[in-house]
Image (cartoon, rainbow, N blue to C red; front, side, top):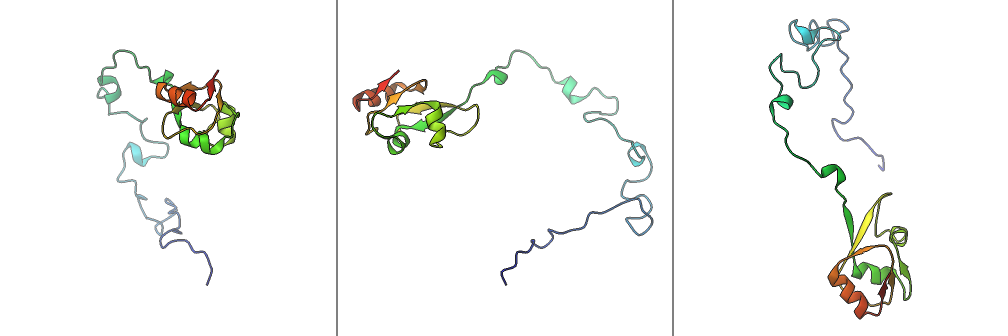
Length: 143
């Protein structure tokens, strides 16, 4: 009792092929001859036997902004009012310290979810228009 065991089928032994008739035997699961049956054989990924491969058949047109996309983590006013005190300065580093934002190169945006009950100072953050109104109403400021 109290022992930790692997689930059933979790400790299956690796099949070693090509070591005589007792391990898979004869063709070792590689089929009967051909390029893929040889050691070192096979073709590169995407190769279609000389036919024009799919990645070259499909047209790629236009510009994609995906590599330049910036994603912001959302921080609600409820979370800020529960984690910060009056006259605290809310910066990206402060949000990371309180674990409201995770990640080395994370970016954050403050949204107006919930109510802000404390006077806090916001520095260097993106803030939605509705959140700006609630921050000003609570007596906070934005630098």
